[in-house]
Image (cartoon, helix red, strand yellow):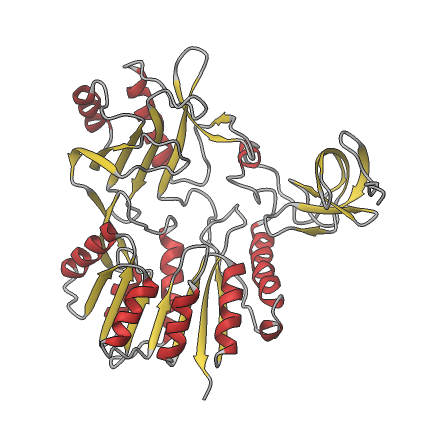
Length: 459
C-alpha cells in the first residue's frame, strides 16, 4: 500500500484560518482536512504559521505573524505562561474563557446520546481571575553560576524556564518563594537533575491559608538530610511571617511524583490552618485542599444547594479528603459517612470534625469502592451520595455499588468533563437523569474546569 502523502511537512510556512479550539485551548487549522494545533490562536484569526511537527493524523505549528485578531483576544500578560502551559488561555478575554469551559463540558456530554440534551449552565467565574492559587509547587533549577532558581518546565520538555512571578499564585507566595531561594543560595546547595539523579533540592512547595495567612513550607530534597539544617530553619523562621509549618520532604526516587513518603518537621506543626464556608480546617503536607479558596467555596455551595440537604438525610461523601465537603454537609444532614484512600487525610478529617464540634460524621480510610460495599453490608442506606473523584473518575466497582444502593440523589463534583460524561452515561443507563450541570471556574487562565452535577433517581 502506498504511503499516504501528508498535505503539510515540517518547517513549511503557510497562511491559515483558525476554525476551532481543542479542549486544551489550542487553535485548530485544517489543511486539506489535516488538523494543525497551534498555541496562542483563536477561532476566526488568520495567520502565517510555521509547521513544527507532523504526525500521521495531526501536526503542531506556531504563529509567525497574525493578520487578523479575534475579538476575544487580549494582550499576553506573560509569555512564559504559554511556554510552560501554566496559563494556556491567558490570550483570551475572561468572558471567552468562561464560554470555552461551558462548551468543553457540553462537547464532552454530547459524545453520549443519553446526555446530548442535558442543559449545561454558564460557567461561574471570578471577579478577578488572577493571583488566586493558595499553593505553589515549583521545580528548582541551577544557573551557570551555580545559583538556584524557581521555574517551570517548558511544555513537552525537560527544559526549566526561570520564573519569579507566576501571575496566578497569591502574590505573597511568589515573594516567599524568592525569599527561601535566597536563603538556600547562601549555603551553595545544588538543584536536583532528573537526568543524572544527582543534586539535592528538587521542589519547593508553599501553601498559604487564604483566610488565615498561615504558611506551610516544604523543601523536597533528594537525600536523607538537609545540610545546614539549623541555620536554614532559623533564617526561614525569621524571614517568613505567619510560618505555621516548615517541613523537609525526602524524595530519593527516580519519579516525577513531587512528594516522597518520608518527611521531617523542622518547625511548627505538621499542618497549617485555613477556613472554608466558615468552618476551620487543619491541612497536612500531603492532604488535598482546593487551590482556589473563593471559587472552592462557590463550588461547595453549589453542591450543597443542588443536593438540597435536609435534616433527615444520610449522606455518603466519597473521596472526602480532609472533610472539606463532608463537614459542610454535616451541618445540614442527619449523618455523613466520608471515605478517602489517603490515611493522612482521614486523620485530618477526624481532627477537623472534632475542631468544628461536628459529631454526626464518620470518616474511614480506604478505597471508596471497597468501603462503600462494607457500609452497604452494614445496612447503611444513604439517600444522597456525593462524589468528588480524581481526574480518572469513578471506579466501575464503585459505580456498581452506588447503583445497588439506589440513593435518591447523586451529587457529582468533577474536575474532568470527559470522565464526568462517561460516569453520567452509566448512571443514566441505570435509572438516573441529570437535573443540572453547573461548571465552576477554579483555574482561570487554564483550560481546566470543575462541575457540579445533580443526578436524580427516576421515579
